[in-house]
Image 1 (cartoon, one colour):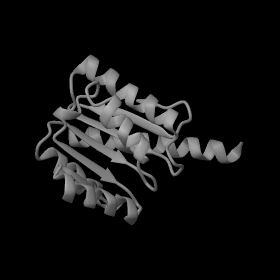
Image 2: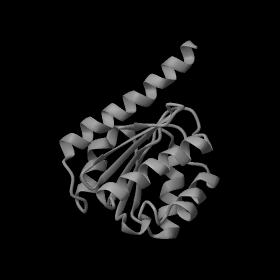
Image 3: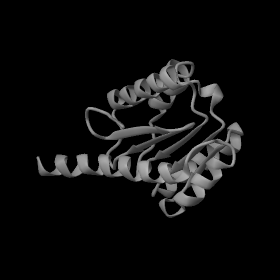
Amino acid sequence: MDITRDGNVASVRVGNLWLAASGWRPIADDAWREYLEASAASVRTDGPFYGVLFWAPAHGPSARQRKMLTHEFAEAIRLDAQKRVALISESALVRGTITAINWFARKNVVAFSPKDVRRALEWLAADIAFDETLARRSLDEIVVAVRGSERKGAAS
């Protein structure tokens, strides 16, 4: 598991699936870059991942961060190899934005609510090879990791 220095983004790889979770705070640009560097390191070590599940309870990446992803890191993380991306968010606004992007870009990016994690994993597994049980357990661990950093920050 990789966790950014600010504790707001955690990620882990399960087979051909990349799992990431952010906390309730907006993602800082430095943390986003650190997260993308961890993704690129995984690709260098283990080859491309074909699916992504990103847990973003309230905030997805900003426009500047999406540009960083698609311009600076697209080759390093093999964005071209990614077949499916599932975004899980409690925010109807974030889910709606992803749905609209998918309509216009015609990419395999689908938004789910947290109650639909199982459905999101099944959707990803239709085209990506990974252990669903391990993915669910790993997702739970990274979500707990970013939530734990929020409690520490609140106590400080």
